[in-house]
View (cartoon, rainbow, N blue to C red):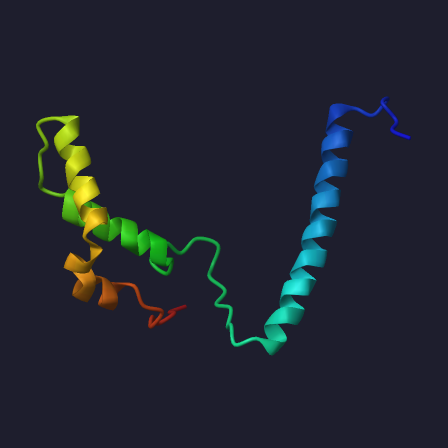
Length: 107
């Protein structure tokens, strides 16, 4: 039976504790699966945008569509963005060297 006399802060803490417990169980299940799979986890520092592939991709996208370019209308800007995503093979060589896990950790 729920005790409705709990404060909002107490209820929030109970919810957070439940999430932490659930997350730990799920993490253990994932760890067990990874022991026998061919997947290798790569742990990244909490803030490392240069190591995050999607951050590299977005930087490349901005370089190709935004930097040193002026779009008279929003429609022109939208068309340039759509063109980039419609023809990714146009940038295949550049993306292949950019989006790789071959990086060196310094520190």
